[in-house]
Structures are given as C-alpha cells and as structure tokens.
Image (tube, rainbow, N blue to C red; front, side):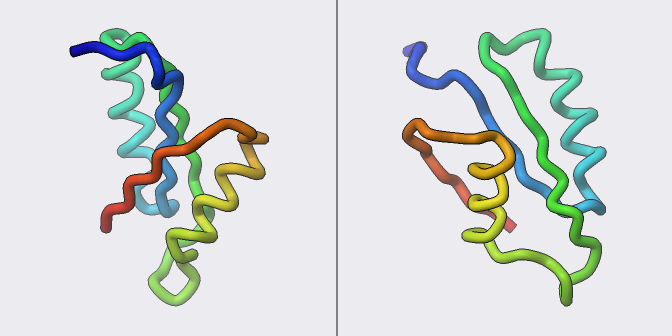
Length: 75
C-alpha cells in the first residue's frame, strides 16, 4: 500500500560513507516519488563521530525541520 504521507528521506552519514549514499541516491531518485537528502556529518573516525541524537539535531537544524519525524537508526 502506497502512502503520500512521506515527503522526504534524510540519510545522515559519516564522511567515509557519505559518497556511497550520494551514489545510491542518484540511482534511486529516478524511481522514487519523494526527495532523498544525504547529510555528511563531517566525522571521519570513531573518536570524532557524533551520536545518533546529535546527528538528528544536525539534520533538523540544517534542513530547518518543523514537521513530524520518523527516526530509524542503524550502525
């Protein structure tokens, strides 16, 4: 069942994998009815990485999000 409630997917990644997600996005944009945004959080090591909450905060601030969010976290 399709939904029109989802308007955008935001993927937050460390610097090491951000380009992989950008490449994935370019292949998926043609087949998806919604926007995909990739945010590189700028971290490059385990010692400098942000936690999930800080990554979400960065996305909310970067994209000026004022709507509801559904958050899925993986590692």
